[in-house]
Amino acid sequence: MTTNSEWFTRAQAVIPGGVDSPVRSFRSVGGTPYTVVSGSGAYVTDVEGKTYIDFVQSYGASLLGHAHPSVVKALCDRAALGTTFGAPTQGEVLLAEAMTARVAGLEQVRLVSSGTEAVMSAVRLARGATKRSKILKFDGCYHGHSDALLVAGGSGVAQMGLPDSAGVTAGAVGDTIVAPYNVVPTLDETVAAVLVEPVAANMNLVAPVANFLQGLRAECDRVGALMIFDEVITGFRLAYGGAEEFFGVTPDIWCFGKVIGGGLPVGAFGGSRELLTNLAPLGPVYQAGTLSGNPLATAAGITVLGAMDRAAYEALTTKAQNFAAQLQQVIRDNGLYAIVPTQGSLLGLYLARSESAAPTNFDEAKVLCDNGLYRTFFHEMLSRGIAMAPGAYEIMFLSMAHSQEDLDATLRAAAEAARATANG
Image (tube, rainbow, N blue to C red; front, side, top):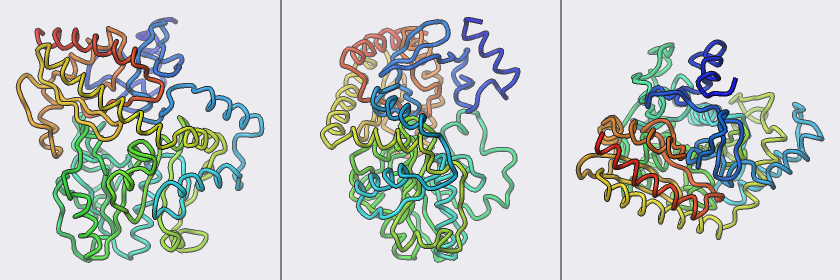
């Protein structure tokens, strides 16, 4: 069995839809997904032996690139000593110390196994600490697939054409309020917390407008609600100290994932020492996990954070922003109108046939994401050896491993792909 089609057929026999996360199915772009055999730096190679320059990078988890030698060594060294114990380990302490040392106001963290689990637990903590029930989230922001938050979720939900999800009851979302992104809502004393992506990265990329996050902080303070930053994507990718450093706004609770696991499953949520005393075993808010603080994940995460000093973040941001400007121009020079917004090293990509403004909310983003151009552009790029996310609502991720030669090759492919898409 040597082709992507054969492997996908085999997968569909034993895995629903042939994938373990819906966007991987290529449902929104059509065609057959490639099955990855290996990755190295900026590249992935599929079962047919084709190598792609990879801008998925596990949706941002691979900050140093795939199979970075330091991460591989850390994993091998750690695996030889055991992989899970259900007991305290040194690694979880070291990773928590590394995280709290970087982020002002983050005094303690609780490690979990995924971003979904981190956000779900943060919401429970907020409700337990405030003794309030309602949560406010923003339209088009994705906070994992827990029932209470799988409403107006953007990203994979939007790409599947689903308004929310079957199996989520009205009661499960009855205490969830949805508001438009980039508009500061008026809260009342029933709201336990406001949950926000500091940079919306699940409706493609929508940056916060001036004073949105600051206004949100002030409104939370006015009514005593807690502000939760979902930094599963932005955490330790936007900047050395994450979104708090990047925007100068301090939330009450942070949620992390992706980068802090160095490519392994992990999540974390945290805040002040006082707030975290509400968690069991100290307080009444229960949360637990057999694999939480997994030694392999903490070893990889410590290695990645240790490799990224402030100069590394500055270099990655400069590389990403230069590339974004060039990508936008090369697509515009070849028959399509492109918007390539950036925040730090995060890149979006919206395509249109005529001049369009950068979206500021989900409704505006949806118009561009659903115009059908990305589907064709994606396959034109893939055929030229460039792997992007198989969905218009996702963003692009550069790693430290992407070289200028990789980016130049991508720009040449984008010129050809834009022409083919425009003519198609």
